[in-house]
Length: 113
Length: 108
Image 1 (cartoon, rainbow over the protein chains, first blue to last red):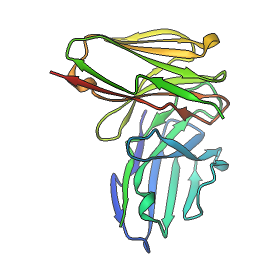
Image 2: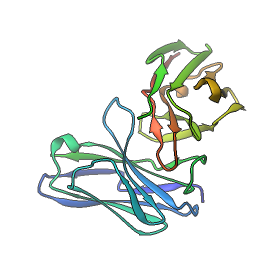
Image 3: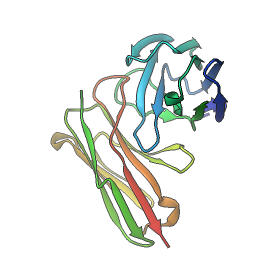
């Protein structure tokens, strides 16, 4: 299995809702990532998990809460989002050391209304 | 932080034409990848190429790490080649940063 699977593919949520994005990989990668991509912009790193521990948080607001329950799963919990948080959220995984390729999921397109 | 600049920002090609996309980066890197993002947002890995030259069908890539640039060549372009091409670099471990992107439109 050489894929990263993200669910759901599309999500519309109100500003008072709580929702979660899910990401799964079975390549034995021990580093997993969340990226955010706004329209016509490159993806921006949000969080990095290394061996199931949060190692990088790129100053992301607390309304985004990541979780890595095991080495294959990565969640992003969303609460009290703003319309400007509408974006494509991408999950990726890689070997837990520099110099290896990253594999990306197909993303969740989030709209906050 | 590391700067990753791509050129040109936009490119329009007639089907069958060749093109060269460039990626310049400001610091040494462990990893460099080229991705194609299709209209649905999927990032498709084209090459993992921290140095040297690779070819895959109509695509090839060259990275000159000592001079901090990489080139992506597309030959005989086709309409499905349209989309955004990103290079991404990893200056350390577990921190892949994306370039500014090149938006390619191939017209029949």
